[in-house]
Image (cartoon, rainbow, N blue to C red; front, side, top):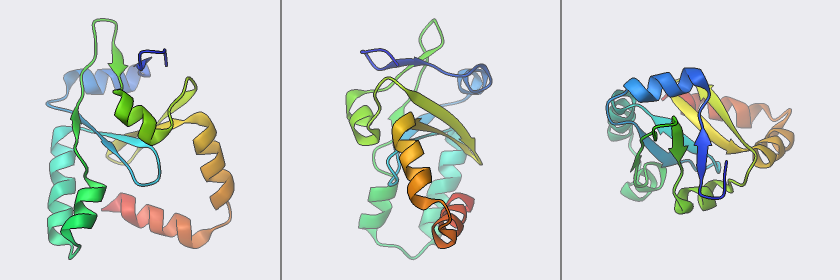
Length: 132
């Protein structure tokens, strides 16, 4: 990622985003960013409507989706507020997880994996959250 917050998406992700209708990027509580296609984001909203969770928790999990677009070079511009939330510096990584693309700071991801390695309950909860 450059100093302006521009980054090239991996080719497979870039083609998905380029063809998508209204993709959005959201903050995630684990300190990463999540890119959702519009239809997947709508399903996520529906799943939260069905859950008996507070409006505050819903707001925290679905806080202000930012519209996403690519420039002519196929780069994604990540706004400063989102970069700060995810601690994104220069070394970032993209992960395809179920219905979203996760954007992690490489060091933060390594620390998260180290901190949670062997933590069955954490990973089971994470899988459950991702399945919703």
